[in-house]
Image (cartoon, rainbow, N blue to C red; front, side, top):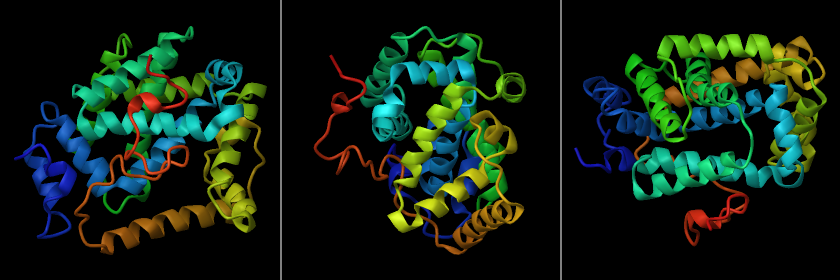
Length: 294
């Protein structure tokens, strides 16, 4: 199979043909290809939404939100910081973390983190959200559940990124899942820095919608958060019908996606980046504003 198989699509024969292919691959040795197929062709919308939520989860930890408040990045340019993070992760997924572009993206991520005193446990937690939030989201709302191969491949993809970021002591799959849950149980609590960073990012999300819909978007987004997240942010509790409506809408999306023909062009790295019109055309990774390549 060519290296571009996961990029161009190869499933003209049925909705589940790629799943059968994935199950023939080695999810540890070939994790990059499995992840590329899963995130780019099978579940691109779900992966995007889940990774957005993963970032929000990290803001519920006061040690993380306080650092982000101190940098001022999310107050002054939340959209650009979001786009920068999205681009760097997508570059490693689309091209591979050991490709030329993947290595450049990793250097930029490491340079950004190297500016600050971040605990290894906080780094482990952030890494864990990138693995387990999409898994849990897709199990709840995807057009099909993730296979064990896809779960394992997602773990190894981010495990290897974490190793290259210098994160120490990355546990095995099951233990890392427990670490994620235990860390949230211990560290999710209200802090002013959570509220401030969460407010800036909520405003960013609402700005994606036309002005008449932004109030509805705000209520819907808050309703979609878990109670522990709303408490940590100090966001108001939604009405029960609002949470039910959000859940029903997400499940409807999965049901409609199940009816679509298999996607033939990967969406990985092709989403719109508001801070960089036309990306990747006309841009280099070094053009990312928050992470100057010098």
